[in-house]
Amino acid sequence: MGLSDFLKNKRVQVEEIPLDTLLEGNNEPSKQEKETRVDYNTAIGLPAVYSNVELIANVIAGLEIKLYKESDGKIEEVFGDNRTTLLNDDTGNLMTGDELKKAMIRDYLIHGVTYVYKNGHTKDIKSLHYIPVRDVCVLMDSDLIFRNAKIRIREREFYTNNFIIATKNTENGVEGFGILDECNVLLKQALDNQIYTSNVIKNGGVKRGVLQSQRRLTQTAIDELKKAWRRLYAGNNDCIVLNEGITYKELQQTSSEMELNKNKKEIDIDTAKVFGVPVNLYDSNIPEDVWALFIKTAIMPIILKIEKALNKSLLSLDEKGIFYFAFDTKQINKGDIEKRFKAYEIALKNSFMTPAEVRYEEDIQEVEHLDFIKFSLGDVLFNTKTGNIYTPNMDSTHSNEKVATDNSLKGGENDGYRD
Image (cartoon, rainbow, N blue to C red; front, top):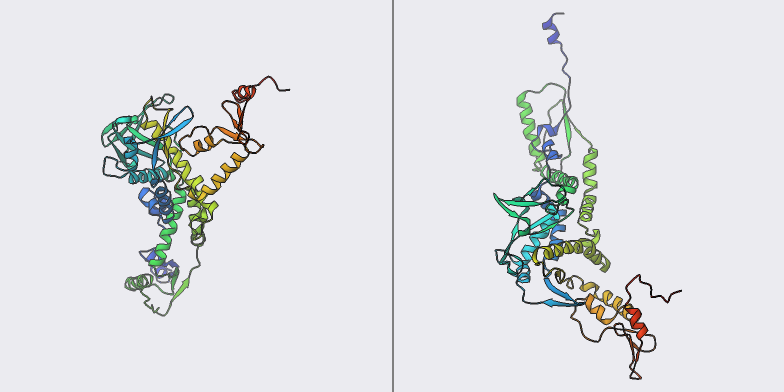
């Protein structure tokens, strides 16, 4: 048989070509999409991320920051300080105080760090300026022990003490690791799920399949067939009539497709856990213990971090140890006020605390003559500082010098009278 006869009798093998390869749209993310790292704008666009970040940021941004002075066991709120005005009301720049705090929390959660420039020093700060993390370049020196750094913002270099810096999971004190760095795989799963769902909707819900032809199709026939299937996948409900010899075979969902559909809820749950948000917080009826858990796991750790950053950056050396900044958390704890006061009631009744200590815990100004605990003999009052015992119904005072001496011992010291 000659070569020409062989070519004439060559069999044509029918291949099954997935329709996805003929269409511009695809239900699965492309290879380029799979290899792309989720950035800030993409992450905040994910519903699960956006809702949790907004919830946490709005709660904290609505809290007022106060300045307190602690001296000799007494706590007093400081009024009229310009720094609290900058933090709560007018930053001296374009932002308001709550907008500044919200921007700080968003960066803290997503990037793991937040930067605020101080225009001035400690008591003489004129304005506060929020700096997006994307505009900050940290310049670390080579010393791994006595570390030092500078911050570059668009070709201008600053010392770190010019900023309020709050970091999460930091290794050097000026940079942190947020959800973008530590949970990017989870974000990518959420993004893939969102892309898949979007493409399914765009394709009109038509399942994937293959076309089989018993004979070779001309290029014109292939082009017409591709156009027809694009219209079908576009969701316009066009009907396609297949010529004789062409059959359609529907493909079953791949395991990845089934997992994307099945695990969407699990991805949302995992995302909430990353932010410390209880899963059932978004239910219509929120149990009181769920809200308390949300405050404990999602809000308070961030509040403590911000407070530490403010005390480090906004207080002068002579103020540190005496003054401190703190969020007024009474607004978010209103739901727990009954439980908190019930605990104080038990502590007072069983002589665990004095009324003065209760007021101290609540940041309430001290009232004199409240350093007493109750004994079991009616309402007998014992003064922990002087050692005096006062019986109101007898109007008598008994001085106990030994008790007063013993009361001056520090924890762990031996009074010499124990067996």
